Amino acid sequence: MEPNAYQYELAFQVRDYECDLQGIVNNAVYLNYLEHARHEFMHEKGIDFAALHKEGKDLVVVRMEVDYKHSLTSRDRFVVRIKVSKESRLKTAFYQTIYRLPDEKVVLKAKVVGVCLQQGKPVLFSDIDKLIIPST
Image (cartoon, rainbow, N blue to C red; front, side, top):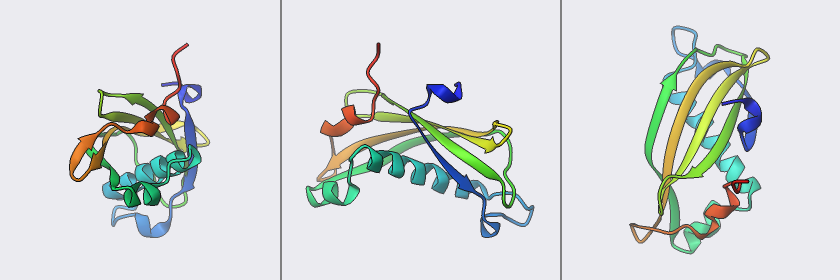
């Protein structure tokens, strides 16, 4: 996916403690990068996790596919880019790619699928339209 095809991006820099003994970012740390970027994107779109929880609704990840392409090392700068689409009536898919900067090398590609739960059961998420760019 071309960088301009994404709806949102968030820049980061690798911290030393995120690396393992091999000197590369630990595979689980990438999931934190992806989650933080999704949360920031949703916050920017006016979706408040705490307020939703008080209403009895929780947004949860139900599936994640991750393809690791290239490793990041300490102090690398990178960006997480996001595009969102409806997966089904109840599921939302976040397509996320991590690019190393400044060379734009693809580090990771992920598809993260989420749903809105109310009392433990999937429900329609009324604010989903805030996340999806309408087709032209």
